[in-house]
Image 1 (spheres, helix red, strand yellow):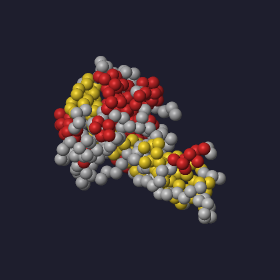
Image 2: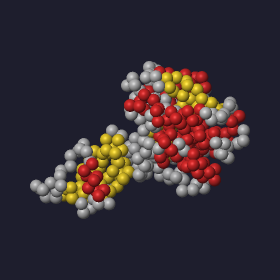
Image 3: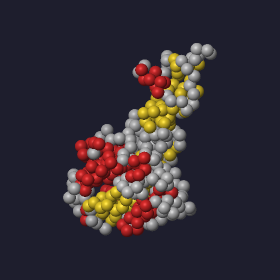
Image 4: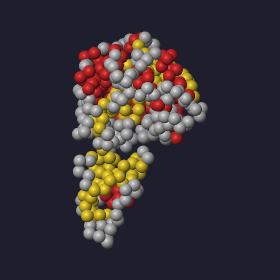
Length: 383
């Protein structure tokens, strides 16, 4: 789908040509991205530093481009099992270093400095867990700072003093962009820095930048962009960093129909981040209002399940057959294994995949929580 904005269309084309092909998986570990990190560190436009180590000793690295006074900082995979944006920022750095992004002013590297910390929680990434090796959710460690990774992020914020900060996460796949919206493939938030949720200058700029990013992405996702909940948490890094005066932007990567590895969200992260960078340099974000930000529909919980099977005949051979819909969800984020979540009338509930079982008979009683492999084989065999 070609974007009407020629610069965005050109960026998407470049991404298709230059994205890192080995990163198209749902879960990334440090071992998987290390060759990409090494390749980026060899590019002449990019500066590279080992800035610390995880609790178990894995390197944490920072990549920088530009040498101007406007400082932007992005970090990914604070939660180890949220890796979509890691692939996206590594793609983004490669594109920026290609010198083919013609919408940027010729002197953009003298105007700004971008710092990127990919995979802040490599131990959690290796284990496939949200938490660090210490069992701590790093995004609840902004005050106590008991994790070396959390201390490192805080030290980077204090040292670099970013004007704009990008906090990049994955959200659960079941959010809808509003009650009637599509899956929230991307959700944004300008986090509060105080319980009263006051909007100061930096937070206003964050909301304006988000409104601009939403406008750019709406061509691809007219009903698939949500607004994340803005409940204040003093233990969360996004809120704490917003309190340091940075225009802090949370981007949550979510599900898209028939996209188990979140490559749609990966691509849209690159487009959104580049849109924000261009807008900061040009000032075009100032054309947006708070009303534009609040026009983004709030994330709607449990708007979707992974798979919805409709009109299945169930006949255990001992009782009268009956019709039921069956809802399936992934087992522990494993997109190849599903369990039965609901049996009955599922009208009003939507699935990321929807399969009709009309005319099919399953010859056993379904049990909640049971593995659904046999059921899926039955339904898929008829397709």
